[in-house]
Length: 88
Image (cartoon, rainbow, N blue to C red; front, top):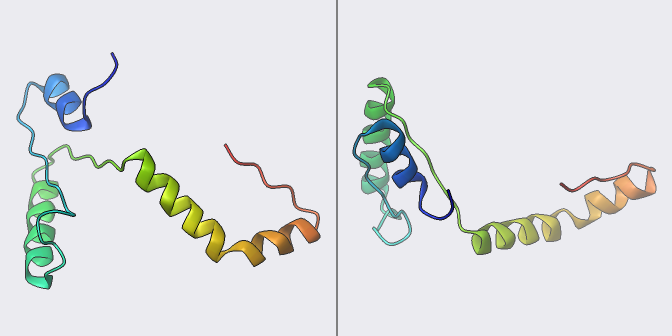
C-alpha cells in the first residue's frame, strides 16, 4: 500500500472513524484552545482510542537543520573527542 494518511490507515485497520486535527491552521496558539485540545486527547486516551500524529518531510528537514545549527559546537566537540556520529 502506498500513499494515504495515518488517519485513513487507522480507519481501514479498525473499521472505525477518524478525525484529523490541523494544529497550525486552527488557532492553537491560544492557551484556552490548547487546554481544550489537551483535555480532549486525555479523555480519548482514557477511552483507549488509537491516536497518531504526522509531520511533513519538509517540516522535519527544517527541524533537523535548526537542531544541527543550534548544536553545531556540540557535534564539533564530539568529533574532536574521537566519537563517530552515525546518521540513519
